[in-house]
Length: 204
Length: 124
Image (tube, rainbow over all chains, first blue to last red; front, side, top):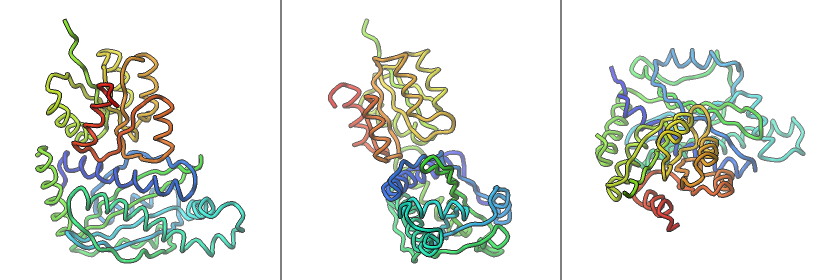
C-alpha cells in the first residue's frame, strides 16, 4: 500500500501551494481582483472515497476542466468549480456587460483558459522544483453532476491524489477543487521525485 | 552583553520551516531560531521571545500571515518582518509594502533567503 509520510505529504502540499500562488496571481490579473487562497489540503484517497468527498460538498452541478500530463509520471489533472461559480468567474473575466446567455456561450472557452492557467501553474511548479518536465494535452471542458462526475481509473488505478484549495474572488466565495489522478506506478514515481528533492535540500 | 538575534519562522509547512532554518543557520549560525506553524502561535511566541526578525508565510490555516504580521508589528514595532509567501499577487505585495513589511516570493532558495537576511540586517 502506497502512502506518503509526513514530510512527503507536507512537501507536496507546499510545492502545490507555490503553484497555486502563481496561478492565483495570473487569475487575479484576469479577473482584475484579489484572489484569496486557503492553505491547500492534500489527500491521498481511494477513488470511491474521492467521489464521496465531492458528493459531500454542497454543490451538485459542476463545471470541470481536465488535462492529461505525461512525463516523469502521468497525471490526470482536473479543476472543478460548482457550475454557478464558474459562470461568475467568466463574468468577472469579461466584465459586467454580457447577458447570461452570452456568458454561457463564452463559458467553455473561458473555463478552458482558467483551467489551463491553474493546472499548468501547479504542474509547472512541481516540474520546476523537482527538475522534471511534463507534456500536456489541451484542456477539455465538461459539465457534470456529482453523479456523473468521471474520475478516470480502474482496478489498477484506485488511488486519487486530491489537492483542495478554496478561492475567494471579489468577496464571493468561489470554491474550486483541484484533483490529480495518479496510477499506482505514477504515484511511486512521484514519491521518488519528492525523495530526490528532499535529499537535494538536505531534508531527508 | 549583546543580545543574540532571534528569528521567528512562521509557516504551516514543516518543509518550508526546515528549509528556511537550514539556509539561515548556514550564514547566521549565531542566530536563535524559533518556529510557529500558525499565525496565532506566532503572536504568542512573539510576546514570549520578542524576536528581532520574523519570516511570515501568508496562506495558513487560521488567521492569515498578513493579519498575524500586523498584530506582531503592533506590539513589537522594532521587529523586522518579511513575508515569505507563494501568494505573489500584486495586492499582497502592496499590502506588505503599506505595512512596511518586506516581500520575499517562494520558492525558498539561497537567493530568496539572502534577500530576507539583507532586509533583516537593514541592508535592503
